Image (cartoon, rainbow, N blue to C red):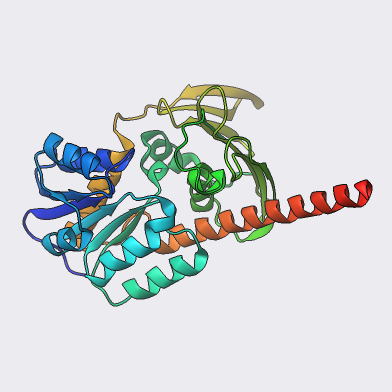
Length: 326
């Protein structure tokens, strides 16, 4: 994988809620030329193109041929189709999470990318959250991890279960922090305002004894983004939203233990900008991305297992209700 010299020509496919921010950030980078954007909505595409002084492409193939790299921020059901097209053109790819709707699709994309001299990065943005970056050196052997990712309903991303839409962020963070195989997964979930699961809770047990508990909702009154790591000698509480970290550690004085509270210094930074800069750096220097396709496939595998557990549990409940009613 060779390094790239000179200014990089990039495009963005899908400039809706998130993709427009990809376009915004690319337009501010000195070593990048935002060559164009593509969106199924002509009005939205033309509006973003005007805003960031670039060209609107109605057909993605025409944009792909004009650039070195592409950000893909289309709805999840279209990830496979669009990413496959870009990879087959041997262009560098930053694909928003999850990598695909199905595990088989993720595996196919990885297979297609093999042999192509491209960077294939997945947009698990919390890896680039300054609070997470500041905490990583302190996360050693967590015994218990608890995450809460709650949002008010926005009627966006409701074409997939909330596990794929929101919880997958925390799944990726946990998998990158716990160096052990998974032993057991349990999950429950319910649809509320959509036909998919809008609320979900999952418990993952690892072979090394670590337990991770995930709670996610897209129908909550208030927004919350927190993950907590409990270790034998310390506790870290990471707030994704305000980029802060509370650090509680056990220390000894005169042979007696007590808790010392510290607030970590977290450098300022916009996670999406840090993610995109990392993507560009990987291309420029010919180095693997921070979050590669294999990492994303593992997160999707766990998300899939959770969804299957919920569906199985719901089937058992429905069967029990039918037996009682008959």
